[in-house]
Image (tube, rainbow, N blue to C red; front, side, top):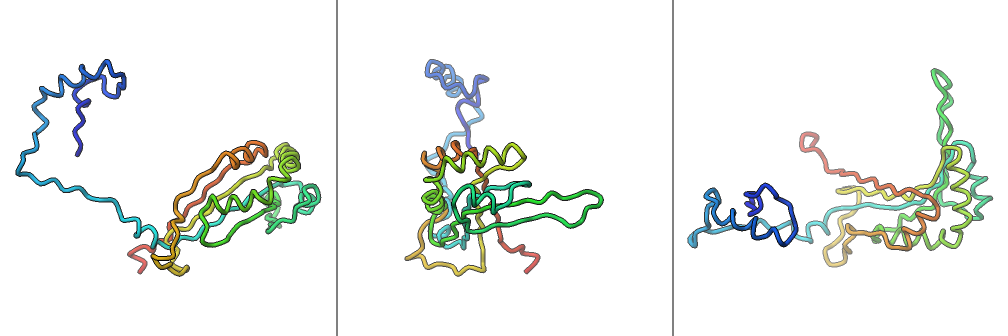
Length: 207
C-alpha cells in the first residue's frame, strides 16, 4: 500500500506548484500515516528479470493486407504491379438463411524469425513504400465498397511448439515501436493498424 501526501487534500491530482504548500501542510499533520521506524525492514519486490522474458517462447509476424468483397486479388495485383506473398478468398457456398459475402485478401507478409516487430514491418515497407501512390489509389477504391487496408501484427506468447532460444544468443523481441516512416505510410494509404496477441500458456487443469 502506498500513502500519497496528496490523499489528504481534496484537490488531489493538481499539478500546479503554487498548490504544493496547500497539499503538504495537511499531510504533515495527518495522524493515519504511521511513521517508519529505524528498526523496521522494508522489502521491495523486484520485477521479473529480463532474462525471464528473453526465455519466453515467442512467435510473431507482421503483414500488410488489402481486402475487398468485390475486387479480386488478381485485379489488385494488376493495379499495383506487386506480387503478393499470400492471397485468400473466404466465403460460403451456403445461401440460406443469408449469403456470406466473399472476402478477397491480398497480403505482403514478413515471418522472418529473430526480428522485432518493427524490423519485420521495415522489411514490408521496403517493398511497399515505392508504390505508395498506387496503393493509396487502390485503398480509396476499396474503401468506397466496404474494403480497405490494414497493417497487422500477430504475436503468440509462450508458444511451446517453438524451441526456446539460449540466453546468450536470444535477442529481445518483446519491445517494438512505430517510427515516423511507418506512420506516414499508414496515413497516406488510409490503412488501419491491428495487433493480435495470444497467450498460449497451458491451463493447469488441462495438464
